[in-house]
Image (cartoon, rainbow, N blue to C red; front, top):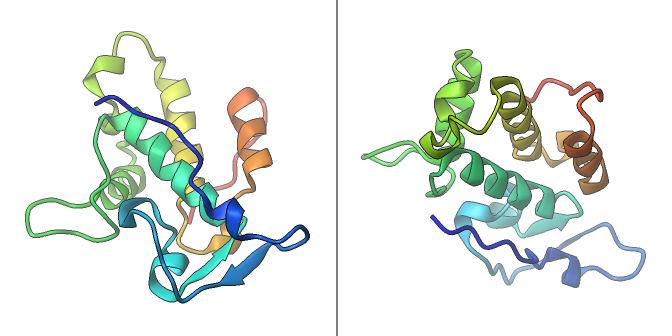
Length: 146
């Protein structure tokens, strides 16, 4: 996997003082779209947070997100990550290539941040500035993802 990070593009849809909106023309890649945008065309400053969370979980796991739901072959990355987290097995998400270079507590913190970003309810997601602070500081306490 060769991750490529770029602008997710939702910010271009906003006016200067606008923090949310609605569109009937939904564009993008479904595995990275916030559910409220993919299903209802609702976008906000939290839509890119969701996309970033998907990307973070992909980097940590070495797996690509296939969408929102289970397929008949395998769960989506998000469903798999949530399942492992809820079972207390978050370390099982780790990409084998990270095992020798990443401390378990650091990895779990990043998974925690990723899950905060992909919470279903946009209201519960952090802002990107909060995500940056969480990633830069090991002392900032993290809320429980829902």
